Image (cartoon, rainbow, N blue to C red; front, top):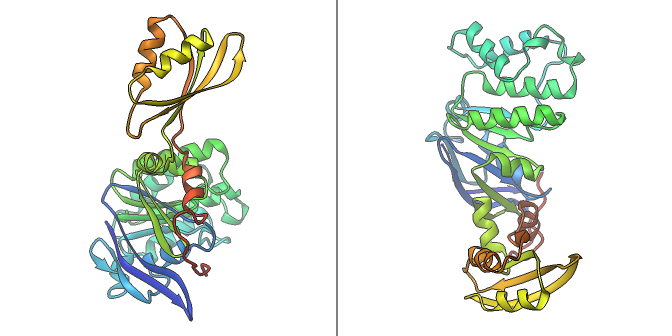
Length: 320
């Protein structure tokens, strides 16, 4: 478990992280998002003990990172955006080296073997890291984070440089790891965050601007309650039927998609779910519904809305 309470970081007169608080629970994958300069990297560096905080505290499994940095780091597996690799070592030499400096007590051969299998680097274990592709280097970086089976994993852009097949494999591995670890995942690939993470924290200008599931954020931030449908049938008749649906505020007729198929924008009252009623009434008149789409925001739209000043007008400092 990760607990962050009133955490702050100053660089001289610049406030990079401004009194933030959040938790990541056991067995939870938390997405940590923020634009460049938001304070995201500074926060992750404080969590891992690479930077000291100016105020507040961060605890890893109940251990304060400032008061007992060594104890806290024993519970952390960290993959920075640029993996900390020794390029002149082979993969096996490097993992054995990491095993030693972490003072790992687990059976070396079986433990490292399991990690190599999980990250799918068995076939390159005897190769010099310098000669590996960027994708394989990223896998070796993830493997070092898993040495010692830490309770908490902090992963910064874990799929950078991977091809689509490898990205799917790493996503699957992260979801598997999330069942037994606390995982904080930072990524600029928003579909990746949505596919993997249980909850999302968004930081902007040093402040937390959102902390919820993507679904709840979408419902909360959507400014309207519109439904777009494409229905085959007489335009005037379909419009009249739709206008009679309870909790319907407005019905707008849009373009003719194809012959006798029109697009309708339905604006319902806040909190009303009219989808089933639309289906029932169209089915009763034998008017096929060819498409139905709600207007809830995508994660990309949520991110842009939260980080472009719509909700917070405060000025923050650049991440350093």
